[in-house]
Image (cartoon, rainbow, N blue to C red; front, side, top):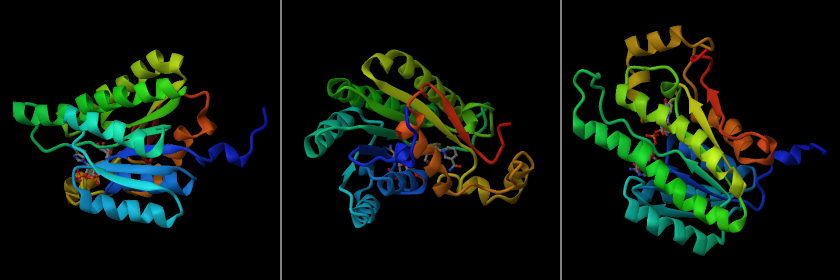
Length: 255
Ligand SMILES: NC(=O)c1ccc[n+]([C@@H]2O[C@H](COP(=O)([O-])OP(=O)(O)OC[C@H]3O[C@@H](n4cnc5c(N)ncnc54)[C@H](OP(=O)(O)O)[C@@H]3O)[C@@H](O)[C@H]2O)c1
């Protein structure tokens, strides 16, 4: 078996990236396109998404922006056939959309916050994976990446979010085990603290930032673009024998 730099190429592949309008999802969507993939981006708000789709088209790839709330199963049921119809197949799914609407600690957390986190981070992730895996099974294979978090490995100050991300890591393992027979690989990518709107309440707070940096050997917050290499590795044939794995990209914080 010959290995060449082409093993990282995503040329001819079609990718679907959830939460692709900004932050880590945007960086991964544009990154996959730079490595050759056509990329569909989805999130709730179309305006930001359209800008990302335009950026991808500017790289000479095909792209489409579709508004979808990934926590609503009827919207997933509309999205997946639409991508299949427009692009003919789905080779790569990046489950990046995630939420954490509260800084409450476990003693205070309310049912509404629990439901909102679990609905998107776990239930939506599960059912969009199922819908896309059915397409992948029919076409002979595919590749799914769940964006988890180091919070799913070691507990942090976001309690329900941590629980949800531990579930995301297990979802990658379960799906990897059950869907290998359809030639579908499933892995998780676990970022550490990364500079996005989602995590601004953490890296903008001096005390929280200082605490996080004490635990981070590289002593800095990650940038969304630093997730791209890991995503391309997992999405490409460079990782052809890797499935059910969680690739941690966190400056060493989870050591
Ligand atoms: N930033 C970090 O430090 C960090 C660390 C570890 C893991 N992560 C994970 O990385 C992923 C991306 O986070 P980020 O930091 O890049 O956040 P971000 O910049 O806030 O982006 C979140 C993305 O998800 C979309 N989104 C939110 N709710 C959605 C829903 N219900 N349905 C569909 N799309 C939805 C948002 O777009 P709309 O508002 O248009 O829906 C946006 O595109 C998340 O899963 C997060 O848990 C982040």
